[in-house]
Length: 335
Ligand code: AMP
Ligand code: MG
Image 1: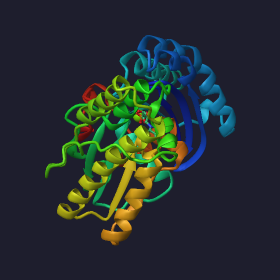
Image 2: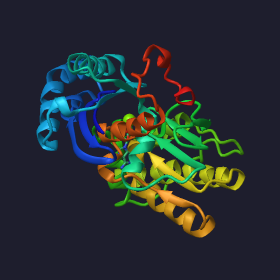
Image 3: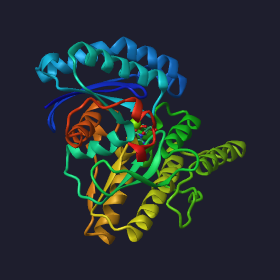
Image 4: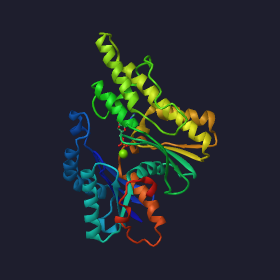
């Protein structure tokens, strides 16, 4: 089975080709350089850049995989959530190919895709827990079985990646802030005490208070003309931002038995988070397997969409084209 997958939910235009679970091509065209000067993603610009790039990226993926479009069996695409103009470009490209080559369409939930990025490295063991950490989401997703998602905790306000990006903006570090802060944090010391956000018994998160605490800290230091190192601010923020993810994960794992934990989304690339999660599992949950996606598959990419589509197609035994209108919801639980 050959799957062509398209991802265009935010600022990456990506097309992947999979032969069953084997990745033949994963072309990602990043728009970061275009959005950098605005300090964040400009939705209108993102849509226009997708329009410009999508055909080239499809061609490149086809050439890399050394297949022809006629050989493709399914066209998968990111249905949502994401920027509507950006999603629209990928969806229209997918629909056009599906119509032209008479192939079934497979709409995929973006966060389900992030979770299935792990599957390119490792088989899943159910029941499992996924910690989805991205620019727009911070969620615990319980998966009793293949493609069964239940959100058991989520952020009440900002997402963790969003907090990284906002702190980076205040420190004038550029966009996206996550990788820059992660790097700086390793060169500094966490000397500034910051409150552990939503440090309670729930499985939910809150990052807007932490973001404000960092902004207030910087303002206070500047008002007092006290010199500070950006590295130390980054280290102090990163410590608290990741500690709370680990504390809450420990709480969930103590209460809900699972065989595997996977981290997913852009923030899954964070070195501190990866190390602390490994420590937690090694020290306290030896029977739980840990899955982390390859660094190259943490950000948005079509390989993860194709992988998730593969399992969806296997479940859809009659191979009938999937009804998109019936799936016009962005809730991962209704996926
Ligand atoms: P996504 O929303 O899944 O596309 O991921 C993008 C988000 O991940 C942005 O908010 C980035 O700042 C964040 N991110 C990427 N790499 C890292 C990292 N190493 N540490 C923390 N956040 C990161
Ligand atoms: Mg994403």
